[in-house]
Amino acid sequence: MLKLLALDRFTILLFVMVILASVMPVSGQAADVFGSITTVAIAILFFLHGAKLSREAVLEGLMHWKLHGLVFAFTFALFPILGLLAKPILLPMLGQELYWGFLFMCFLPSTVQSSIAFTSVAQGNVAAAVCSASFSNIIGMLITPLLVAYFILGQSTHNFDPTSSILQITLLLLVPFILGQLLRPWVFPQMKKMPKIVKVFDQGSILMVVYGAFSSAVVAGLWQQVSLSTLFALMVACSLLLTIIMLLTLYIPRALGFNRADQKAIFFCGSKKTLASGVPMAQILFIGQPLGMIVLPIMIFHQIQLMVCGIIANMWSKHSDVRIEE
Figure 1 (cartoon, helix red, strand yellow):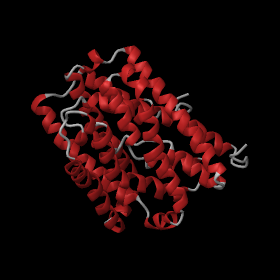
Figure 2: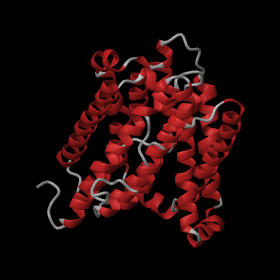
Figure 3: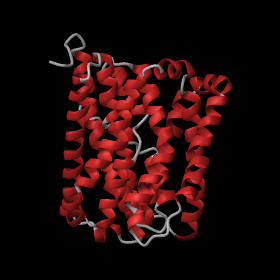
């Protein structure tokens, strides 16, 4: 049942971090120290992501610019449009901070690891998925702060400098990623020798960020502000958004004449949002804001997308001889 619902160990640990932060939140000077350690861990994480990315896969995937353009349109145009159109309904239902988090989620790039993994399981175009998901994360370091500046913080009294935020995100995420790419010939062979350690560090750094974010939110009174009915409404909103996006990422590539393997890559890359990049970006972009409420929508959406994509990928892998159009 856990495999069917895509409830792997990492997903369970995410919930554990939320519970731990609710019961034993880190605060005060300890929170500052923990935040510094987390920042270093995130930088190392993106260094490892850069080292894992094959240059051959990038070169092969870059040739498929039509596919990447469509994924880009889903990620940075369609998602934001749907999020903005939902404002009249979601803002009074969720409140300003949770709606900001929902809209921020719509502005985020796609996932990298899960997009590639699900495309591989479904026997799609893995090379294109590697390139498309990676490009989405890199360009998202520029586009996401600009969208947040204009549509969220630009509409508030919060003094926000997108240039400063882009620079911080570049130093924290992009520079380590590029450094990992440059040092890949020496680093990647060592990573292959200890895959379990790399995986533990990969997931552990995200768990640290989630724990820190929710700790600060709990200290600020998160669970006094978010009722069960509001939480349920947020889950429904995330589910409806994912349903609409998945239907569009399934049928539009088919109508445009992409082959089956490309359709699968577009489906998995264009329908998801990243938690790994999202939470560190939120820490930089929403300084002084209720961070726990900002990242709550992406955490919920992240789990729903894993569950649904896991089921679909397994179904397609068992029926690889059946046309995706059927």
